[in-house]
Image (cartoon, rainbow, N blue to C red):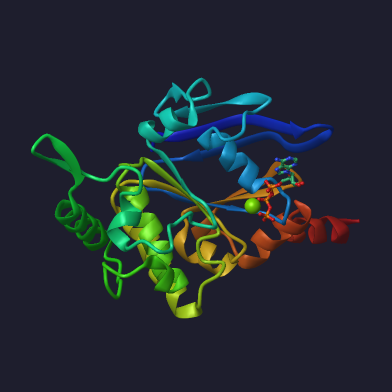
Length: 257
Ligand SMILES: Nc1ncnc2c1ncn2[C@@H]1O[C@H](COP(=O)(O)OP(=O)(O)OP(=O)(O)O)[C@@H](O)[C@H]1O
Ligand SMILES: [Mg+2]
């Protein structure tokens, strides 16, 4: 499978602090890659470098083979890189349709004046929700009245309207009740089935193990492990997170003297 997004040798320092050290990470179409690591390991920083919010000190990033480093965050978004931040950035007082089209409301012209076309907006928003298979109580309610999982669904539906090739999600299930987590994991599976590449940042390793194809572990800014989910275990992921060492290998080494 050829790669959609390719991160190679990315390094980043904030002043004297080295936050990322020659990190590699790839995502293929329809692949879900987990990005895990301790607090401060560099996960969010790496993804902000992908979106263009931060610049890197070294390395390359390509999308479908095209270098994106010289593109602005807005251009990268148009190229197909979409990130959903932990705070979701939703307008809580506005309804679902307004949030999905925030800042890009469809308009129609009446007697030469432009008006927001609410009927079209509502219809298109509903179509996006249906495409995702998301369950929402009512499309015309302020999203601030929705549960965390429902708000996450709105944020994912909004991301979809940008026709993304890669969707990056930073802790989408962190604040959710157990029942809602499954709903969000199903939305991730839906993105995957549409051929979208997904990068999932999460501390909830059960979620990561259940929904990803591959898991990249960052440890002190280095890619300490790149594991195939079907062939790894919770223990292996945890040991890479805490020490960047393979516990079984370390034990075998110890035994050999
Ligand atoms: N704008 C910044 N200026 C200075 N240091 C920063 C900045 N952003 C991040 N850092 C530092 O970079 C390191 C990595 O932070 P980052 O937010 O990428 O970690 P993370 O893996 O996302 O952690 P968490 O799981 O807690 O979200 C931390 O030591 C953090 O303090
Ligand atoms: Mg983070």
